Length: 96
Image (cartoon, rainbow, N blue to C red; front, side, top):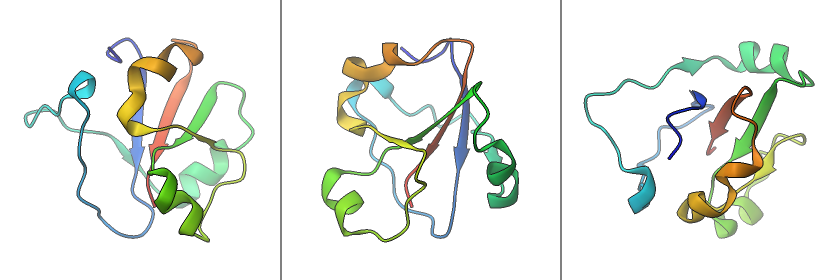
């Protein structure tokens, strides 16, 4: 369960349909904060920020657009990796 984390989503270039795993079910009434690319650039290197690329492995390998400091995590295995990130960090998820 990720509700103890600060969640910021980023949309870099294209809006993509999102499929949520069972343990991260979408709440249609919730709004997800978004930031601009420039705002994200300002956060690069900040030790209180974790940037997480949540594309599938196939999409990640085939893309030339990657944030070098981002960790790639499988979006279908949230329960396996969610505890890797401190609860006081800002987590930025992206999929572009």
